[in-house]
Length: 637
Image (cartoon, rainbow, N blue to C red; front, side, top):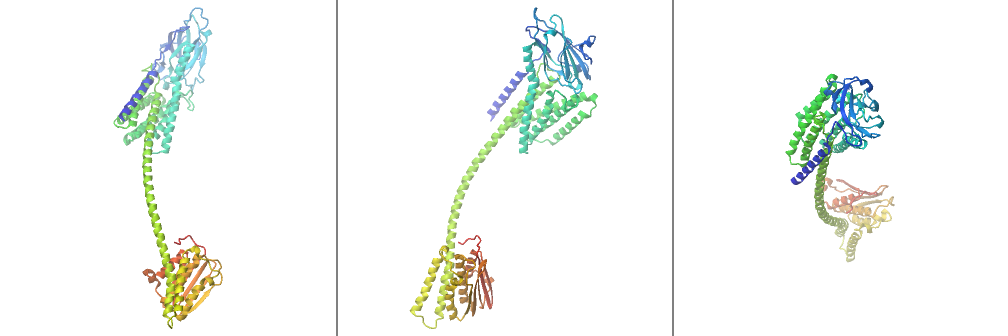
């Protein structure tokens, strides 16, 4: 970690040195190269005048100046027109027919015209408000050979219209061979135009990326503040590229908005740096917000005579705020051990150095330094790229660890699931066995048990000793009942009788003789035809219910009269059995759980999604079983 940090810091430092070495180049007030002609300067002069032609300035009171020139140092609070005159010699060799010379004007602040020996060479579109803006636009002009005096002095005239708020004046001038001036023009265009285009593109790109990060992850507040700061930074830095004042009405309004953009940008950038460190300073932040509000309001509320010192003071205050915040945040960054915080600290210190150089150049304390302020965006692009890469790397590592943990948990879950399924399979087998045993018990109880009860009653009520033949007949019936249980235990092997009478005929034959022997009157009523054919399982179930009910009457009721009714309806099949016996308490029987027959009947009917109703009181007991033709999805065991 520490070795990687040291290597990264060395790389960033080397990059900064390369940038400074490549772009801290020297400019001179007027540079000439000894080519075919060697132009020589005699002097540069300036005068206040609103004349429209250099011919009218023959008697003007010219003052000698040096370029680049800001006329506010000579004429404070002056807004208007100033003429500049540059006297020079062509110094062409004898016999030279043409002077292939060109002129490079680094800046004219704000709008201007150019004459060569009273011949108009070039003019801005608007020389009155709203002014054209040539303050950061280098101009390349070819000097016509026929207009150049090869043996006598030449004059270049510059009519500059400027505003006191915008450092009015004339920038550096270069003359020489056309090809050489073209090269210098391309270099000036890079430093004064192209680099700012790239700065705006880079700032907008970073702002959009950070804005999208904030939109999709609202907890990333720092990126949201950086996106907002990028918007105001683009608004501020766009002043270097604007060639017209639109959409603002004049140069003063544009300057006011430009300073306001810069002030708000500094506030947003400070909040971004604090949020990036996950810090909050409520009192400091409140003070900064109030200060920004006051400064921004002052830009439009201060009267025009005091506007220049006010804007300059606001600019200095915001620069001071930026420098103090950079030092403070860098101190906090270097106290931590996190790489991205160290990167922010190094970036802020470097930007602090570049902004100091730009500020000294703005106040013309470093005239030989080109603008380095646009390269702060490059530094922040590097910083944010590395930061986002680190965050992405951390996220990928967390995802990898999560995948590993997830795979391990999946393996454990598969093992637990396999164990659970195996255990459940064993439980299912045991449950199936228990259900089979329960079904078998019900069949034995309802079928064979009923047959045994009938045989016992037949033996006990016999008026004389049974013969061997009769006894063998009883045993044959018991064997047939057991065989029927075995044959009918599988639902698929049960056949549906032709009609209800055939279905219940065996049951009637078995109980009629017993009821006769016990002097019990049996009323038997069965519908002759199926309205809708029931399933074999429904027939078997209701048969067993009826068998159990009649057997219970024999065993417990002491009834003298029994009524049996089988009704075949449109929707269901219903059995109703009534007797006039002693009855029983249905609630106590259900709660005690000792009645195997009752539970067997209820379980059988519920499997068919049917209903078993039992009503009993002394003298009347009614059992009604109903099975619907259309079965719901139930478990039959």
